[in-house]
Length: 256
Image 1 (cartoon, one colour):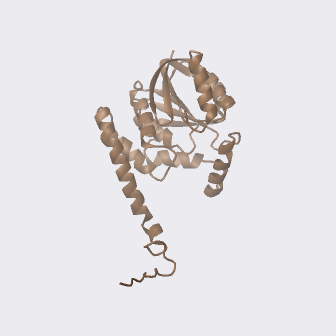
Image 2: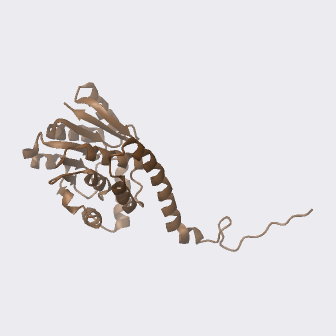
Image 3: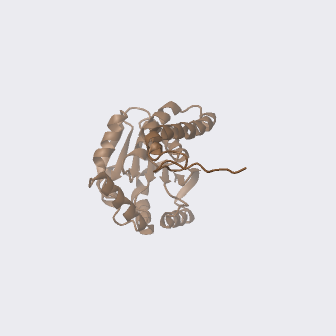
């Protein structure tokens, strides 16, 4: 029996007319978000039923188009902030548009709790291979700073009172906050990923952690070889008391 192959309409891609995938992409994206987030939250609620995972989901939905963090990583940040004392003071080095900052802020509790978001909000000009990535994003945004976007995200989520942008480079910001040495409950370092910069960030910010506080890092064990090398050196030097946990490429330590 002779078979004939049906021709696709002009401009078709696979079995769908050209443009259909783009037309329905928001629905597909929403379904993917619901599946991935739902799968993560089922496990998270079993592990930590004491946390407000509905609030986590609210923040995650706002950033569903952002591909810079996984659910386990963002859930871990949310958990670290929730486990900090009431009124906790948090420092984040490298905030970009505020996604990770919002998860930290959402996990905090108590009057006066806040995240000091340290960033020049102009990308990382000294970050080697990552500098091209940041430059592409700035061209797409048509802006020379992500601070307005950072502020808009916090305002949209009703978290503006829980964040204080510190518009400066990491080391200069640390010098400007000298009065807070020994008082910070949680420090999250996600700045320049070069070896020298990561070592400098640790040296600059470790004195700010209170005894028993937490210092966490992003991109440990990733292609950011300088970050991994710097952290291993600090472990061998006895900088940290113990590992609090690992999620994706985030690792957190209890401070001496």
